[in-house]
Each structure stands twice: as C-alpha cells, then as structure tokens.
Image (cartoon, rainbow, N blue to C red; front, side, top):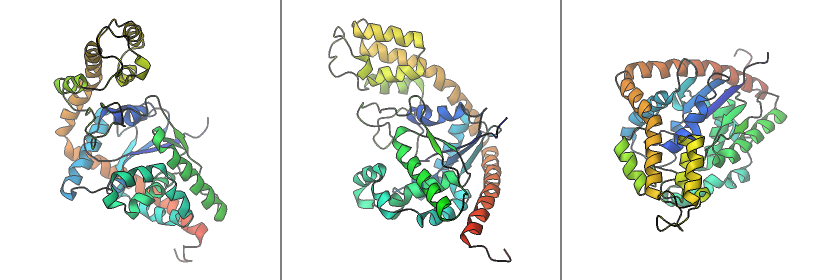
Length: 331
C-alpha cells in the first residue's frame, strides 16, 4: 500500500462564510478526510492584501475556524490551522520569489481582476499573492490542492516554482496538482458574479431559514422567463444550479422537466431550494452554536495544529537551506 497523499488548501477569513465557500471548498474538503493527510489553513496573510479593520481580524479568524469545524472539518481527522501562526510560510515565500520570473506574476488573471476592484490599493502583496500561495502548499510538500477553477492558474504557477527550484538546487518539492470538485464555482444571487460578501450577493452558512428564503426570493433567474407560464431554461438558471447541489437527483430531474414545460414557477422553485438547503444548513448552525461555547477548546486545537505544522515546516526549511548553501557548518 502506497504512502497517503497530502492535501493542502486554504480559506480567507474575510467575513461570513457563504454557501459558495461550502460548495466550492469546505464540502469538497470533507470528502477527502478519510483518504488523505489533510492540511487546511485559514490564510490570514492573504486576506490583508485588501483593506480591513485590524480590531476585527481575531474574531474573523476564530469564526472561520469555528464554521469550518461546524461544517465537518474534524480536527481529529485533519490539521486545521492559521497561516500567520507558522512563520515559515513567509520565509519560504521570499525564497520562492528568487526563482519566480517577474513577468509571470503580471500575467495572473486574479491580479488583474483584483487590481481593477481596488485601484487605490494595488499593493506588492497583491502582486506576490500567488508566490505565497505556492509556499503555503509546498511547505508541506502537498501533492493535491482542492481549488476552484479560478485558482488553477495559481496552482500551475506553484508547479512551475517547484520545478524551477528543483532544477536550480535539488529535488525537494513535488509538483502539486489542482483538484476541482463539483460545484467549485457558485454564482452569486445576482447571477452575474461569483458569490461574494463584498458584492452582497451571498447566502451565509449560518443564516437562519427565513433569511435564506428572503434572499432566494429576490435571486436572479432565467431573464427570458417573465411569467409563470413562460417555458424556462434550467441549464441557464443559477437557482437550478444550486438545486444540483442541495436537492436530490430525482427532484432535480423533476424540476428540470417542470421548468421547461412551465409546470413550476420561479418562486416555488426557489422555496423548494430553500427547504432542501435548510436540511444541510440547520445541522451546521446547531453545531456552530455548540462550538460557540467551546472557544477555548478551539484556540487550543489550532495552537496544537500550528505546533505540528511548525515541526513539518522546520524540516522542509532545513532541507531548502541545505541545498541552497544557507546552512552554516555548525547549523
């Protein structure tokens, strides 16, 4: 039997965790827990490339850990930790900067998009974001990285960085592969953009049933379906896409047929979705409420996880410095 493969992925503590995060990331991670050595990271260093309130950061980080645990990331089955608690992430990033061509970072699609979104704050961290991401992954020599489609370009850069380092110094790092799961890209309630808190087009994981219904009632659907008796195009409707995640295959098939024949209205379709979403979200809310009473335990858990990560990171950095000639004879 071969060695268990290591998985690494991260999530930013940017505020409310929404169903897009759950479907595209956390839900995919949970499926990997029994078969892989999983490392999941709250990437707070990545999140500071945009303006934020430092007073709220500790709460945001803790809330992100709590919700991930509530969703099913059992710390007994994975290593769930905070990026800034392991300083080797940024140390390896600096080293990787020296083997990353300047021009490649300028071609990153996400850098271009984020630069448009925050024209008043196009900082060097925004530019260097994918190099730190490569360091996050390769510090633990992860071979599999669950990501959304929008991150695949960054994973390819991480592979290039690993390849360049290995060629220039020695074979230290594996070349990680991106793993895109079902529903990895969930559109927001506006039907136009990726689900995002900053765009206010999201449904939060911990929002109550009535709030979810209210948000869904105003969600974007097929623009050509103006009346209930107009035939719909479910393959173009974001609500139907969400049904594919939260509803059974049999129910989705029925909705598909009914929509095409104008046998179901958009509002009724949305309320069916709300009911099925509640079956998934209610247990998460209940678990989150329990964890709210155990915050000291959560802090102990991520502290222990960071200690484990620092031990692994030290081993990697010792190897890196050795092949680079950065370790003295007495080191």
